[in-house]
Image 1 (spheres, rainbow, N blue to C red):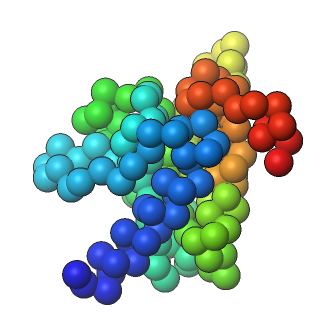
Image 2 (cartoon, rainbow, N blue to C red):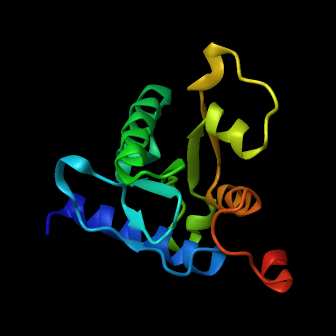
Length: 156
């Protein structure tokens, strides 16, 4: 296995380890699926997760994040899912701290998850929004994705 593939596998595995106790107990890495890629993680009904790691993820600027969000949106359509989430590893944050890695989605997705009552202005629809993976997971659960957590676990 190449070094870059090993880095990607480790990052995807870290995100799966975070997701399982946080509402997606059946999350697992998805085998490569060729031209009709459906993201990196499966077992999360309605949600497609794309995971980027390595130096490029740690230093990614807005343009690269937008490109990756477009890729993730294509994967969402391929999977027939409702929501696309891009997760990028943060510099200085190991796999054990994946909860603090960045989760990105476009502003329209965030607005829909929050129950916006009016459409966004065109200029903001595809604007990238960034939050911690832990916040994205909580937001998705509040919107009805994943499984609810016990009150004690939710406070942790």
